[in-house]
Length: 163
Image 1 (cartoon, rainbow, N blue to C red):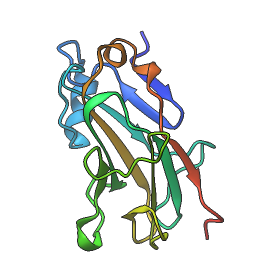
Image 2 (cartoon, one colour):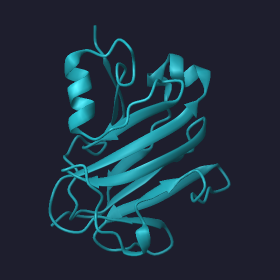
Image 3 (tube, rainbow, N blue to C red):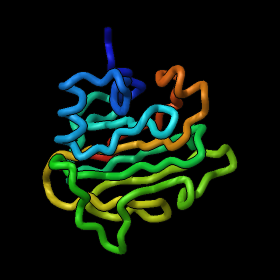
């Protein structure tokens, strides 16, 4: 049985937080410092590659855009490859359902990278290391719980060249 669902650049493990989680899933949750709750409570989608399949790097700038997930609350957080938060000026660690500015189509946009992009929410990622983005969806709609592959996944694209 395949326990991983991938939607665009984002992956989720269907066993995380489940009573059916095997020893390997439980070890992965423990090592990656992911608080795994049941799917009715929270779903976790992880991206460590962009939509083209290239590994995410902190020195590069990425645009993340999409519609708010159908849930009570959601967030996208940038982590270094050691799963710790980056040193972020003014505490900009995530974008969430409370801080996202939605356009007339209900879409949000954010960028990650070492330099702020004007006019858009920015998650600073200083240094030169791997980057992991985590999308947490709290109390997701029943349809998403039943079919995690139905997520309308945020697009994750490289902005310009990555030096």
